[in-house]
Length: 214
Image 1 (cartoon, rainbow, N blue to C red):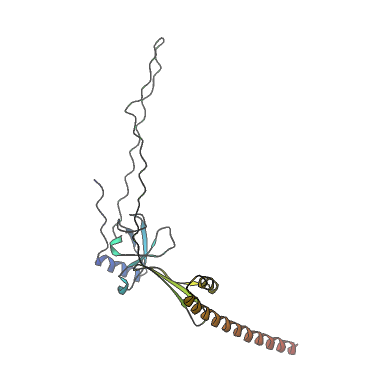
Image 2 (tube, one colour; image 1 turned 60 degrees about the vertical axis):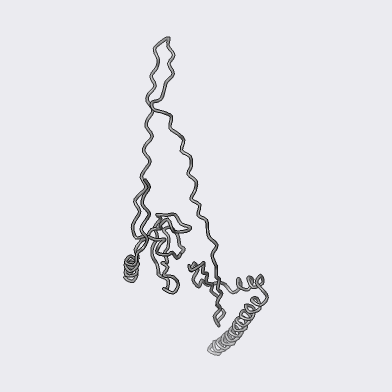
């Protein structure tokens, strides 16, 4: 019989994880069969919790990865899965003895010929289509960030994006969107040019003062 399904995170488990994270002691969790895109039984570290309005998702960093992903309580468990049993060793073949003079004997290995193991098909998970929301945000200083929401899971949280990359992306977007981005980029460029002019003036004044001193 196969192993019973892993128990999903309960309300008490989540409270315990929140308390441990607040105390600076992130507790490991493991992925259940319900988790999509990861290996069931693999471990991860809890790094944050989404706001309740976003579905009470748990943000974790899978072991061996730098990415931070969000999962529902049903996709995680606080119970460490039992280790997979090791396959039994293959029985040694019986020794073959040399036949007496004048006789011919065919050596026979002890036991039946083991069947070749067929490679198990890799686990395939059908990805259901979900709504993806990509948000670009610009500050008055001309700094750009991007936020990505896949369904209710936030997979990218306000990561900085170079303004030049945003400008190249704007050329492939609808004209209204590209025009709005272009206005923001042009305003940021004008502010930077003004700043360069001010810095040049300050540098020239400092150089004159240095020459006067000496």
